[in-house]
Image (cartoon, rainbow, N blue to C red; front, side, top):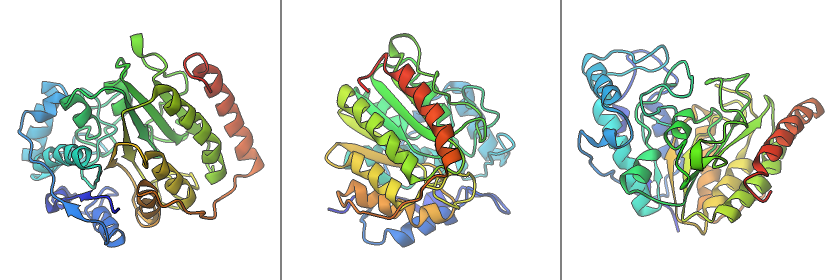
Length: 327
């Protein structure tokens, strides 16, 4: 059964006047690849709904910046349509939750924390409101596992749920020493009663599909232990080989396997990053996985030097996580 795609042309109106990596062509690319999937419209949400996730000052800043068409920071632009596009992106995530679908939204959201920039990040990294968090907080959902496989650490999402033990946040990303936002290390495990529910799994630059495969048993063990009632995917495709903004060499093999994690579970997915080839090939393989179509794609292999660095990360991650999970 084909999963529904949540989409509105309003998402195309948030755009930079000249050129920017986060642009409307991204969604047009995805739609050209997923032609067989049904499209449904996002829920409309009220102007106070961003405050379900964010504080008043940040929401007011976004609204005023959009009205003026000002940049929020060196990475993150707005125009006169950003406010409405961002509201509808929240609605898109909610619609995806209700329909076990994939929200093809813009602007993205996983770097946006409660007050905007989160956990020491220098900028918002193209994000406005935290879309993946909205259905969880709006509906007070329990036992949710968020899997964020954007190549950049989802610092905003992890900050929002830092002390929430009902949300396990598993974030797979390139070594923060080498990539924005410069944080997201294995010892960042959550606070208070939520310690151990925030999981950061690192990949060194030039990591291939073989290293992702070494992470899947850890992810599956945590899911088996936690027994989530829902899996929410922060779905970024910028780890795909040669996508442009990072140095990871993932291919269809990894994205198909990530999708399979959601199959047979209640899930929803929300688009985060992905800027070129990842939105053509990675996203198709991921959706195939969500639909239960497991494919034996050829994968990339990592050099010995890369694998050695990864082994160091993995050893640290296992040592920390074994205090909380059966891995």
